[in-house]
Length: 368
Figure 1 (spheres, rainbow, N blue to C red):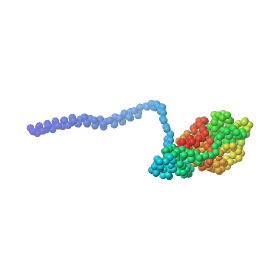
Figure 2: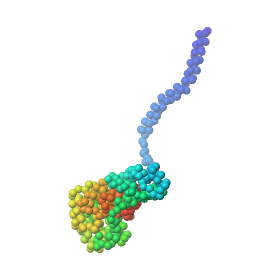
Figure 3: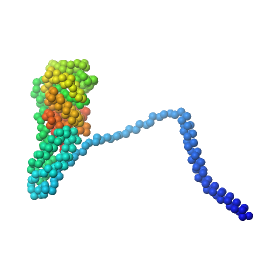
Figure 4: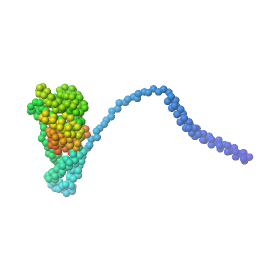
């Protein structure tokens, strides 16, 4: 009797256990079958013919801002002795410790703006020497020092200025401008921009395609000439560049044209053949002005190239292009200080009217 009850109780417990496990077992079985069902469905879809639809193109406006370098804080930090003097005196003289950190920041600022290292060091040494000798208003030390730094920099870069418009109008026709510089710096576009600027002053121009070396150089100049309705004198590639320039001058004389602009070949690195070619053009043409065109962000390379051209041919002035990039314009400070030739214009964009007279104060404001 006892054994029978025990067997029934055991069977009852087994039934309860199976009922409790049933939902979980069902879920487990479903989980096992799910991948098979999905896989079968995928195969069926793959076997069916598929009609590809072109995804809808959504127009998005993406705003990209150029990462510009922030101006460093250029100001003196007076130490205790100088602060005490400033309380009791109307004027003070600075100690080297008062401006050491400031000069370090100034040198970094100059270097970041593409000023040559040797030029930046020279500027800072000269500023230190002059500031330590100055009598400075005790109540206005910071603004006085900042103003004084700009004055010193302006003085160190002082060169004889050129008023191109007045020079052209007061010279015998035609006024001949020889454009020099490396490939890619923007000589061709600068010629077009300057033509527009001169036209606004009532001055006519003719162009000489004397870059007979670089592929497509003549076509590039020709395209600008068509847009601006300017006469272009050209020969075939490989022709004598001096002969092209000579013909352009003759045409200008016959047509009473004011200015002849002569485009020339450039190389990324100067070489003897290029220099000899440019010397010959200069001898034949006897230009009134030799303008070197260079990029604002080229830095030390531009200064070295300009020195080579200046030593070999002689540079009268600079036009610096692409200042609309992230460049702060420090290259111009190096050119003015080391080569002592003026910057007449700066390029600020791609449009024909994006050529502005150079202003040293605007460049200094970017840096100091």
